[in-house]
Image (cartoon, rainbow, N blue to C red; front, side, top):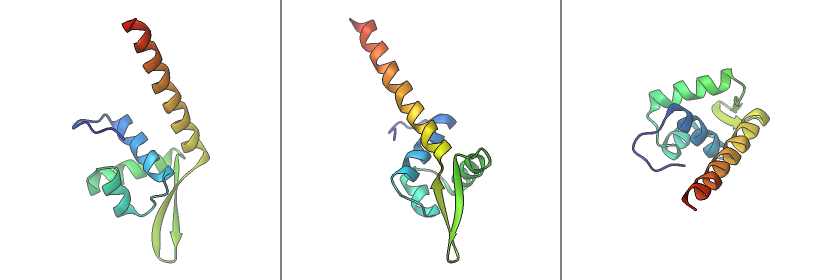
Length: 94
């Protein structure tokens, strides 16, 4: 996850997917791990659920969130894109 003070919405989506990939699944823990407010967390969760990147499950009476295969694929492509940009940046410096 990035440690900048201003993240784009896209950065926030990927940060949240990374948190879920690490196994954090409780809403409050996700909020703290992704460094989000409660309101922003709920907006992002809602968007990611509606697009199929994550799913909401119930364990007894508690909500939990899981990353889906689509979410894993998106995160994988994102990481590859970032690595590609780093390589291109190193070429420019040479």
